[in-house]
Amino acid sequence: MRSAHRVDQVRAAEAALMARLPEGALMQRAAVGLAATCARLLTRRRGRVYGSRVVVLAGSGDNGGDALYAGAALARRGARVSAVLLAPSRAHAAGLAALRAAGGRVVLEQEVGLADFSRADLVLDGIVGIGGKGGLRPEARPYARAGRAGVVVAVDVPSGVDADTGEVAGAALRADVTVCFGTYKPGLLIDPGASYAGAVQLVGIGLELPEAGVVALQHADVAGLLPVPGAESDKYRRGVVGVAAGSARYPGAALLAVAGALRGGAGAVRYVGTAAEEVVRRFPEALVTEGGPAGAGRVQAWVVGPGGGEGAERALAEALAADVPVLVDADGLTELARLGPGALAGRTAPTLLTPHTGEAARLLAGAAGGADGGADARPPAADELAAARLGTARRLAAAYRATVLLKGSTTVVADPGGAVRVNPTGTSWLATAGSGDVLAGLAGSLLAAGRSPLDAASVAAYLHGLAARHIAGTPGAPVTALDVAGALSAAWNDVRSAAAERTGA
Image 1 (tube, rainbow, N blue to C red):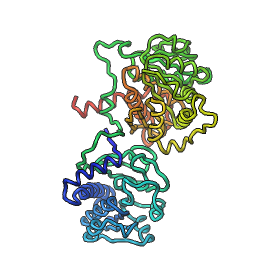
Image 2 (tube, rainbow, N blue to C red; image 1 turned 180 degrees about the horizontal axis):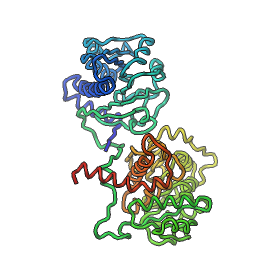
Image 3 (cartoon, rainbow, N blue to C red; image 1 turned 120 degrees about the horizontal axis):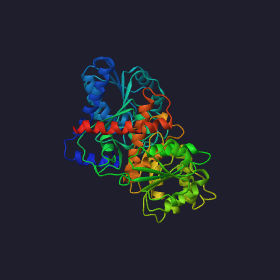
Image 4 (cartoon, rainbow, N blue to C red; image 1 turned 120 degrees about the vertical axis):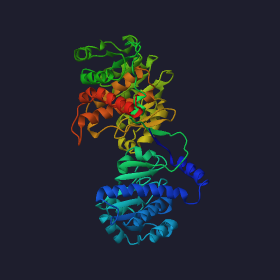
């Protein structure tokens, strides 16, 4: 599990540790780890550190100090190191002295700095640390636009990226590798910041941190959450998931949602809707009826909304009236946005919402405007919500008192209690018609199998993304939603096998 902590939590942990250590010891720990990573990258790139051209972009404060000390370590190994001081009067004095003592060169002129930057084998981005807000300052922006020949290594966070949220307000420096200290930062795991971070490497510096508010699951974590039948299991004990999906206009949504549900761990799938004939023809194991959720029989969870069309209003009302977990997707979300959060008031069973950013905009407008979405309520722009993914997911979870799986380049899962998980799997090839229907069915099946909304959503997103990677391959090729559904069993096996190898089971 990758655990990410807020800046204020990191600062508090650093202060507590520095009170017990000699002055400067914590910075030295960080610089040693940073220099070691840079040395490995240079060796991989050029075969050696000696003679490599290294540029340190040093801003004010401790982030610049980390970069300067690391530059000094590389200079002692024979690298030709230039330090570009973007705030000369506020440069870290001890780090700068160490660099000069090791033979490093100091650059104050921007033209010289840009020339060195474009020719360097490796650039250390120490312009702005984890406390930085907003985009790069004017003196640093040319480095974000300039071409470069070498690898860029960000110190703790790429300059211009908000460490707490991943938001990028203006220009930012794009890194190939980010070396973070003590813990991951949320902005390194969530787009758009994650797309600036490159490969993220963690250097331990001995911080004692509280429980993380943002985490990214790994194979072993997901394996522990997968429902596995026991010797006494039968289809009903494993759970029955109801799927209310599809319409005359979108019959395929029913097939795709059922395809995902069949591979999510529940013992049976009960389909209701107008596509019953098509569903049972393609999936004879499904239990089907043309009625609504109210007359479908006992289920442990409902999936409602994919391709629901004109039937979404009735399906949503009947599913929400049941005392079981309900996943709301697609047309169900449009109907919920019209009704507002009041539609979920009084429910004792949990609700899981799975919007993309356009649907999130409508839901937030519905929350602000009341039962009819508000006559004057203007939905927030979807691109603005996508640029603030963490805040958007949390706002929705709080407004509707439901767990939210916000789909997108980084899928974010937030529950009303404040827990957040970000999904590390997936591929841009998943941006294809029907992939969300498969995801909804998969997550609903996990709900029926007894997983909490947070766990069901997190595991579904992980497996869904992993399955897409299997199909797309490397460097990547188009996939279909049904291809992804078909690869879910392979993704499931990969997760369990990797976890078993790790534990020796």
